[in-house]
Image (cartoon, rainbow, N blue to C red; front, side, top):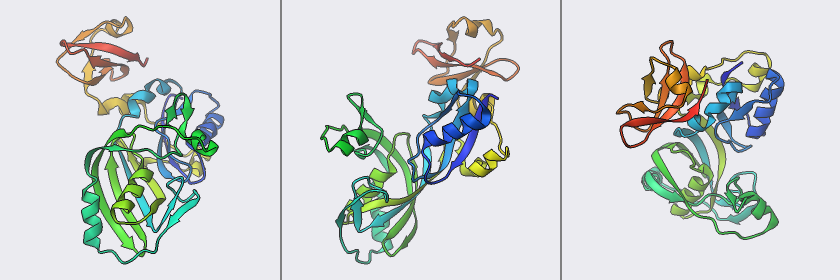
Length: 280
């Protein structure tokens, strides 16, 4: 089997747990995921199998969409519900308009400070390893873009939002920052990834369905059609890694006449496409 399986990851499983389950189910070691979901989070996890693992780097650069629930009044060391409470404050009634005005301030390009309890590496060591050891380390903010934030519901101290954002955005950090703007400590109480690039939660299979063999496999030919496409007459051009003259820019998927993807190329800024990765 070669292709992509979309999993609706349940809470309580790491992304690596899901990879392990699929390795066992499909009897292959060549399985990898495209974009980590925290154990408490649920929703779309894109998993590549066998030859499709060659394309993981091209399937992780997509924008994401989430539905998150922000809990006002308590902050935790992990920025989510699994952490230790470090600050509390009684929440007073907030007008819907005030929340919406604050949300608008987070739309656009910005620098975001990631949570200390995250898998980002500094000097070869993951941040959560520093945090668990009580060690301090300098963390640089990351460039992200929030395309849109919508207020879905507000009840008591819970604020439910839908977020469309770039790869690399930490929704936990976003929730904490929104809470601060509203004048309260806060943490992310719940998170669902509803979309990863072109892949939507409605397309995903549950672990139970996967165990029963009731799931779809998306081919690389189909998955990479989100990129600009170039069809070659002679496949040997690609197999030998030769440049292709083209006015296409950015990352480009190279297909043969039969509609099979052969490689990913990128423009060199001089009117040519150069080979980045073969996928045959």
